[in-house]
Picture 1: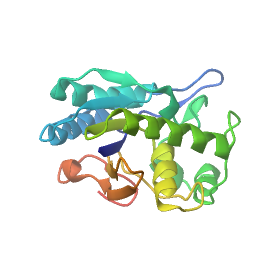
Picture 2: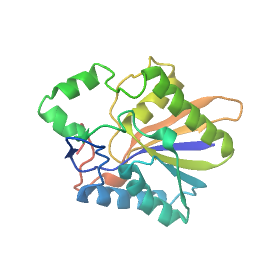
Picture 3: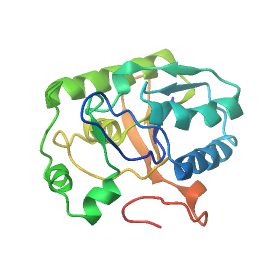
Picture 4: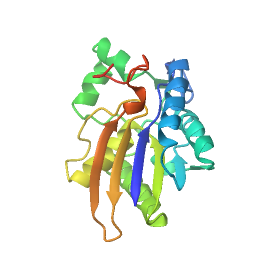
Length: 205
């Protein structure tokens, strides 16, 4: 089967004194999601899953509508900082040389909810279960940068929390054989954003 891991579109910045930030998509983010949907409409999707966080659900909505599918919410592919009271787009952190950006590059773990081992077990278990439930199909999972990092590092046999940057609405394709082999087909596929004038990510415009 073919597993499409899709990072959510650009959300708004949100910093709260108390409570969970869980930001919605920005205006650019909604435009990114529409272009993603148009791009994926050329392919047959058998199912679409999304993290329960708003930025992932809102990214998945136009894709699901175009494919005529219902979104299946999968709590186990939520981001490692899902209960944080702040969300700052990574571009802003990098531009300001924020300590949070430096910590991310160094691979430091700042979640108080679960250990790195627990996070990786959660996401790998969820994605492997989705693979098992859709043998021979093509499934999209709209999730988060940390989830994509963790699963691709698992497939490649790299150390946990190897850091690379998934662009907004980027697609990462994994071919998953029923015999257990996993092969990465594409990484950071963002053809749908080229020439749109919308932000793509840290290293592409």
